[in-house]
Length: 196
Length: 357
Image (cartoon, rainbow over all chains, first blue to last red; front, side):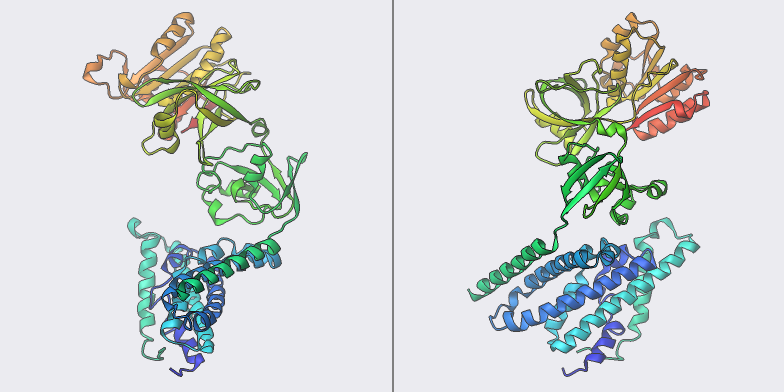
């Protein structure tokens, strides 16, 4: 405990990257990483939702669930909060920022089922973060996920030019291999900063 | 105890917030949908284009009920549709994309829309009908005759199709009309039981004579070109019999003014149907010829007719097809093979009309 929020922030991006060391949020990572632009778009949307849901879930957990001994239901509550926050965000964006809404398009509703979002809320609960630590952790995890999808989609864009991928490895297969190799590289950071 | 209370309270609050948000945030006001620059629909925005068109009795073909899985409900959106969604991209070719073609079920109406719908789709209506007769044609094909409710008639070109609404769902399936257009108060369909198919299973296993049904139509650009005097080569198999039968009876009533060769492909004798009916027509009109061909005749069939894939039979039968036009109806590989054979025989590709299913 007592970790500096900034070191949690750095750790969440590099040493404990939520996508590459915990392998969370893999499905959108595989599905949306065909182009760098859509990949980064998805990354930004994920970061936004991660931050918002962590901001809601932290007080909900500490001021409602813990005092009433209802921690057992935290999974359910977190999931529902995530789903409704995404809904709410979509409505607000559609009303007030239509261009932003249309550029996010399908990504926003897809995020509802991204397990990395739930993971951030669960980690902050398990690791007993303070509110400030949670904010930085959520922001860092979102950025880390964005970095991961940006790396993978940039490599996949280049792969298309090279071509010549064996049939069975195309799409998901080669993406898994890429993710694995990058993940190995990120493992090299481990031990530099501690997150707990 | 307190846990249950707290959780329920939380859920209630969340639900309430969402309801309030929906009330205040989602209001698009009145939007105008302009169709082909003339017809205007005033709607309260928020839902998708397909729903609005359906409620205003404009029936765009659609099979999946607005889930972007069939890709049939294409319309041209000139203005107000926003960007094409990733859900649509699978169905829309790059040429269509440049023209602004969208799937109606994926276009959310949130402001004024300017769209284009082909003329022939505007003629489609919804019909309430009752099943008058179900006839077993082969082991997996049935003929369904539906009588349209009092006072309404259907006006279609021979070869077109209707969309049959699967009761209890929002889904539709397309079936070609097997009856000729001069019967205006009844519609016949030929339905093959597709293993695992939602609609064909319903029609084969559940539907009974006297049941009410709903369908929309007519649709489709596969129909008899009446301004042509050329000979007709029709090729089909299975339930691809339906549109050809409609065309055939239509022409028969006019005294069969054009030469008509009908190639019908099946596996064995048990897959043939309407054989007597067609032989009768042959006797009546010498310019009509029915050529069934079996690809896998069984020993007990004692088959003496043509054997082989239907395209091989066509290849053997037709030497010069320059003065003919072709109507093809069946599964895509059969049609592609038939087009290759026919163009080799001198048929122009623009004069080959086909319906893939």
